[in-house]
Length: 95
Image (cartoon, rainbow, N blue to C red; front, side, top):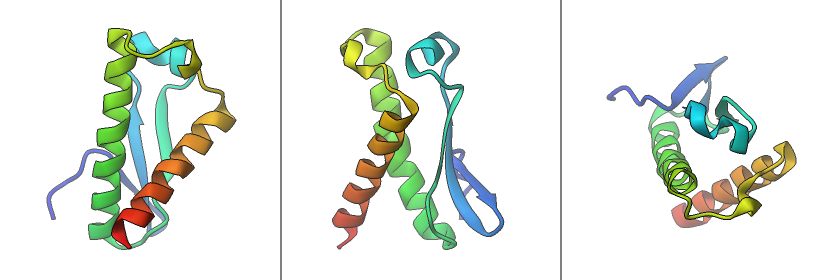
C-alpha cells in the first residue's frame, strides 16, 4: 500500500490528520483536523482518509477563496458534528 499523507496509526487504530493552513487557522479555530477513522484495516482507513481529505480540502479551498459565509466559523462541537456527518455518508456509500 502506498503511503497516504493523511493517515496516522495509533495503537492499531487509524486516524485522519490534515493540517490547516496558517491563514485559515483563525477561521477554523484549530491547527489541524484529527479524527479517528474507527478501523484497524489499512485499506479501509486509506479509503476513508482520502474521502475525508477531498472533502476538507474542498472546504478549505472555499474558505480561502471566499466562497463560504461567516457560518463556517465552526465551534469544536460543530466541527465534530460535521466530521460525524461525513463519516455517516461514507458508511452509507459503502452499503
